[in-house]
Image (cartoon, rainbow, N blue to C red; front, side, top):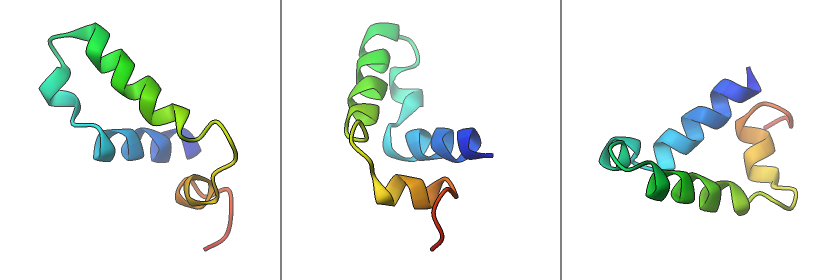
Length: 53
């Protein structure tokens, strides 16, 4: 279930349809989005259900 929530967060924050024809910028945008969570993120852990609200 956490993977689904993470994917929803990516889709919400990165407008995938705008970059769907160009793989490299899309890959970079997703990587940049995930990089912000390199350190523990309470917000993300709550969003994906790993911490209580």
